[in-house]
Length: 628
Image (tube, rainbow, N blue to C red; front, side, top):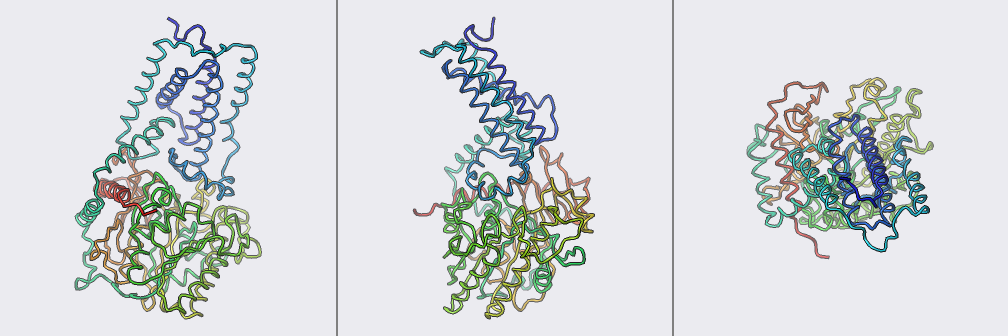
């Protein structure tokens, strides 16, 4: 029995199948750095299922065009996903399409990481188009006046391939590690698995209740940790209300990693302003990024809500239509105006939806600033702070208490600071390197922050203001900066995982002595820490948070995902990254940066963080939508 009917052009099917499989191999080479024979089975089943289903529903006249189009689309998707992985370190799902409109905003950054070898995905597209045209000219295909009858065994083959793919998807259902799951399933089945997971999660919410979920989260946190420990004095949290009634300024510093604090290069201090600020403030040297698909906007979301990003969509895009419990809303209840400043267009990362969702009174975006063309985003940090200081002075004159958030951009990848604005000279060994450019950009960010602080002091606002400065996410690309080379150049121990995720957190409180707080934390911990200082009891308000007050926490576990697999976590001792599960994971000591062979005692932390992040996802999805 012949597998295809006589009138079927077998060569076209076979050629397209082979080409698509070669691209799957190429994707595995770029992303997973290796190819195992058994890993090709899910790819083959998925590709065959796709082509057979298309064969069943496509007229013969258009079959060549449809197959060619599918091949071209797959080429584009694999190319984009490879570039995405190079930049973010994770395999994107179809939900990343929501962020395609952001690409032009960061085209300079994205373009700098595209390797010429990635274009191999498209080599066959033109050739296949020529073959199709030749065949059309020769009249190989039927006239297409009616759909060609399909043999039963073609349909059976399609169903069989779908069933095989379904089996692979079902078997990988218990793997929380997205990278491992993607490697096991292959690109197409991984997308299907993501869609099935999203559908199940949505169905589970139909009978959900946001108050009950919040209560579950509170119970989970309180049962797993003794948060009070010996740090609470006479039943009152440390520093509770120490800054009550004061203004609050939050500086979110673009791509700012903690290793730059107290670092000197070529005899020059990289961050003199932040170094001094850290001495006079609460300085948290063991805080780590937790952002998801929304990157910088996710950091804004977390610092204001203490809710984890879901990881499958930018929070500004997916949840900008909600009423988000937040710091601006809490402060608004006691008479504060909340303002946020960002020199880019407010539609970037859908901030035009997120800021109202967070309850900000006013936002200032691109039209509010004079564009001095510092980088592809537009205005410099100098211009950001100039406008911000003017607005804050106006509120001071009106005797208004304020919360102001500043999102800097001058240290954004690829870290190009105009020569006339550079305040540090790199040694020859770093001149022109990404590391050298990065340190130059951080130095500029630090310099302009210093000028802003000087402006606050001159206007009489400094002594009545809590200033919080933190990094939104990593800056250095590991592919461009070998950790051993970075360590050698800077004279430090730089780890490609821990050092990369480690961001500074500095909280300056007038009247409080400087203190280094070595407690491990994350961006979900910023809001509870600030509210404690302001004398706002989240417990009394039944306010649900998924982080902790770092000034009153003796132990902590924070989850990390998207840039690392779900189930990854930091605690006071290690950074853990799961494999298929806990047992085959890896752990690194966060201080020595050495591998930890026996991490079995941290199994409870792994189970806890998976449950906590699950509850966080459920909680934010159940939040009510805002009125249009």
